[in-house]
Image (cartoon, rainbow, N blue to C red; front, side, top):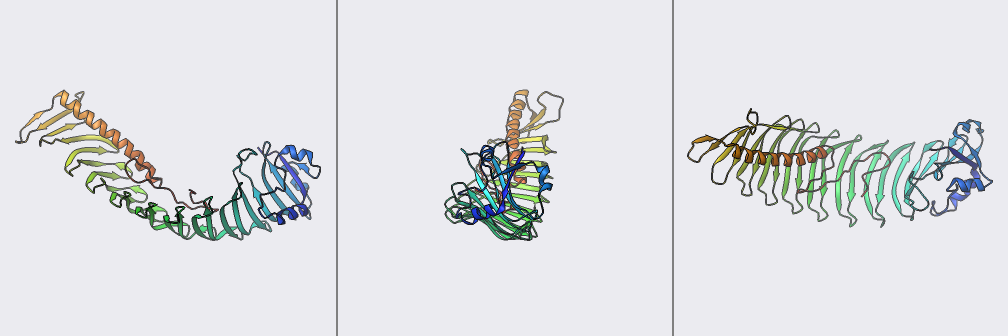
Length: 372
């Protein structure tokens, strides 16, 4: 809660700013309210008293939370003029985070905004022209190596945004046109192999998203339409053999899901309607027989049919139906895990146990591109 403001002559602040190589090595404003109380140079006022300041005055506003400094803002003629320093809300003297320094001219951001760790290393820099991001923005690893970069035009991301591993290898690349993701975004493993390809049209996933194992083999092919899962997704094992075929309609499982064994032969079929298993389920056994059940039934375990190799059939016993139902439940559990994976993927942050793990590259104002 901001409840005190301290003010003192701006000329003194200019002297402090101009003589500090690391602008956060020394602070113009006291770091705590306790220090303010002991310094007679400062006048304490409340926000509602701003209007009492004369238009010709030059002054520095030191803004505090419950006890610690949140920001310091220089004013000339009631406009922000000079270097504004912002301190994170979680800032404390014992566990400091990072600072942001932004140059202002006549009340507008103008020049290079920089963010620093308290240990002195530069974390990010963004160029502003007429209060909007314009030009290249970059952020850095603690070692000083570039972690990511992008370009802004009139406040909107434009062109290629890139992330790098600390060894300098490309980690990810996205293309922006008029502030929106377009074309195919690419992600890479640290060994240089392709990790994923995601097609975008006006900020939405449109087309087939592909993911790869670290050894370079294809992990999955997933169709999207207007940012929603639409069509047949295929997931492969590391040896390239098809493991799953799953049908989607508007982000929901719809139709027959097919599961294949390690030899590529069909192992099971599960029918989904509106995201839930309903209708016919089949289990293909190694001896060539087939167990088939129907979920909608008055019987406690449903009803089913046993298909012999010679083409003859018989009803499934309750014990056989129970075993089949247990298998289906296990499959449902598998789908629940994968459903979470699909939901997360639509949000563009992909994580699953067997396949590759992706990271988000979204750019937004002040060059914040999901920092490593």
